[in-house]
Length: 209
Image (cartoon, helix red, strand yellow):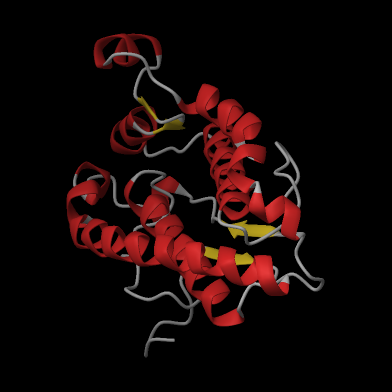
């Protein structure tokens, strides 16, 4: 925990499996995940850029971004149902990611949290958010994009290593598990800051809570 920082408002955890993971399920994980990946893809896929801009009105990968930005900028409001959509979609994405990365055996639910927990604050746009900051948050987050590219490559290597360990032992090494969860936590904080626009606090450069 950094000094003078009581805790970042966006929190993410995955329960460490209390039982051995299913080796057969882990071996065929990418194949087993295809149906839920198709569902997620249908929810987040855009067509061409012009068609998306007209039909989706600023939907980026399923996330409402431009409409929220404009509401904060001109009305200083964040409609609750827009927040609920973004929050639910972000949680669904995390459940799918946790399953693909072998962190859990439970097949991703479309609506239940299961063992994947994400906390996002619902902001009072008039008092909690700077109306102008959403215009440049995506740019201010560039250092995090670079860090996440590197961390994602390392995380992918560790997931492959964990896959072999699970096949032989049925267990996800705790150190690898915590690192992969930390990368997802970092990603969620950057997404919450730069695209979900729920907080003005700059994301910390750390894997830990």
